[in-house]
Length: 80
Image 1 (cartoon, one colour):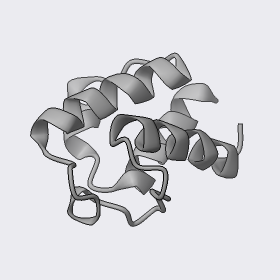
Image 2 (cartoon, rainbow, N blue to C red; image 1 turned 180 degrees about the vertical axis):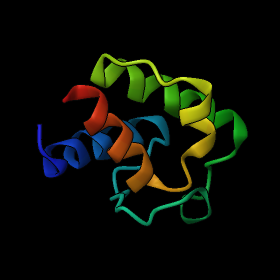
Image 3 (cartoon, one colour; image 1 turned 90 degrees about the horizontal axis):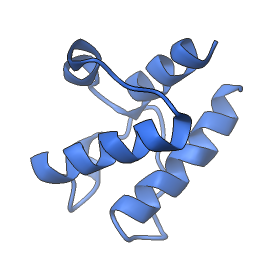
């Protein structure tokens, strides 16, 4: 799975979790860029991403994610 495919799937997850079809995430997207992205929604988002890609993040990975690009990097490394 290449980076573009990961981002296409991530966009769908973000749109579903935040109930906003206008969301398009990039490498630089952070919680500051999405209105309802708070700590509770972050937990829901991580769970939805794990389900979408069939992976489980460890706590160190979750804490290290500073933006969506970091999340995509971890997903790609886990699927390789």
